[in-house]
Image 1 (cartoon, rainbow, N blue to C red):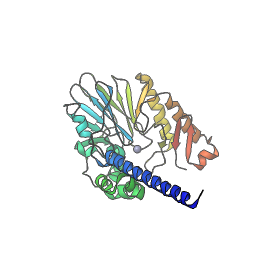
Image 2: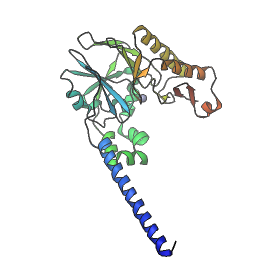
Image 3: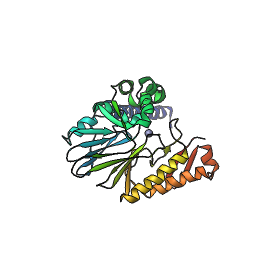
Length: 297
Ligand SMILES: [Zn+2]
């Protein structure tokens, strides 16, 4: 190849690489704007004609509509206009319950004014509601600023606060038309984690207690694994007694088959019986089948 030909090839290579980079940056900025920066109304996915699912970046949120009242389970990260999405589907008065006190489940509460959360998670929720805690621990790092954009990070951290009403240890909520929602405590991921049973539809909503990627039990507020194991067994019993074949976790796959609870039980037992492999011990995990627990070591 002559010197002139080589220079032409290099010039075109530079032009093509620059064009690809430009398109990648434009594409990323457009995706970021739509996903994080616009206060968009999330798409509703109909589970049936009175049950809807929404996704707010990573967390699932659900709307259960009864004859008299509607129930919103979790309000996500606060990045999307969940209130408007709910208003488009029902004109019933709306109650909000959080499956637990983490910000990716509670940060949209302000849109509804008031939410109910277990009194055992009030300390966690007040910490996660604190703008500087949220900024310093989750959103203020360079990666999140690049991903969300600085303005969105500030909007989420410093948005209005919701009001909280503590949930009792057990409760049933009558949505009307025979749709009763029952609350059960299943501590583990947080001390105030709850399951919500939709009796009529045979569905159980379980927050972050049984997720397909991993369950976080290494957090400061998480319980010990023995308590988590008791909650797994209690959840299996609830499913058995109420004809539940699928449960509804918050991340990322939803719903999941009840058979997966066996894997979480066995992962907990591996930890408690010191049966973990070196790799699991090194990674502070306990794994069985499709279940992974991240544990305190
Ligand atoms: Zn959580």
